[in-house]
Image (tube, rainbow, N blue to C red; front, side, top):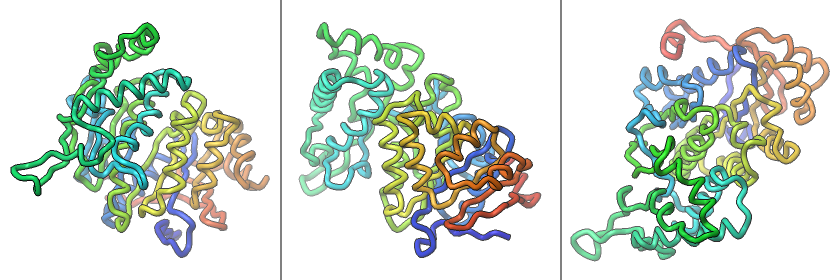
Length: 363
């Protein structure tokens, strides 16, 4: 039996994990089992689900399932600012502008400084139209008397259409054209005020309906939402699971977005958190900037679980992880549900087992 308390700060430098394995190797079953067992321990858990694999576990464990896509009535506004979204040493609007840079880079593909400046100026303007400025107190409404204040609601925030409507200059035509699908086209479900409830210890963000090309937008939006929840209380243990993480730190992403994801893995420990990177596409994980972000995330995981991998992915992994020739052969020959686990300095061959009752809950 292998017992691992990844939140043991005396034993591990952080509670982060990476779980790599080819399709059908057993990594999703392993993650579901972790979610179930940590749920029993009362740990807050947030899951990004691009493959619709965690719906049943959300239902059986009384979690909140958010289906995000064109056929859903769950809406999330990328311009939303919440009371727990502030970063250390920054104001509300300043924090939001920095996070929006990642989302804007995904839409407009690595903006140059001139276009980013144009967009930032316009975004500041639409916040100002809503009475929101760099003064943090502008995010609060007075209720009845001046001594009673309340943080602005989701309805008080600008939406993507507000940005679209003020992009009128000749230099802004290309930007406006790329924004059109998010306001009036196939992605117009993003042009709404937030209406989802994230007041639960287990939240699954189902972004499967976004489709292959658009999943990265949903991943980024929910990672920001969950990151705000993680920072809310440093004394509560929590975990965020990033399935198919290569979409945000691979070649199809941008350096700005990848840097945000790396920041989560680097700093989540001080908020009592654990970040879990999950992927079957190991080569894609290391495809951006010569693998610098993939390597940084790998190095910031105290626990690594390698399920069976294809030869090409083992070759890539060998370049970035301390794998011996013997372990290389073992990874290739692992059966379904078997894993080579790196736990601190220990390298252990393990088999994932579950009781019949656990299996009923998660599969």
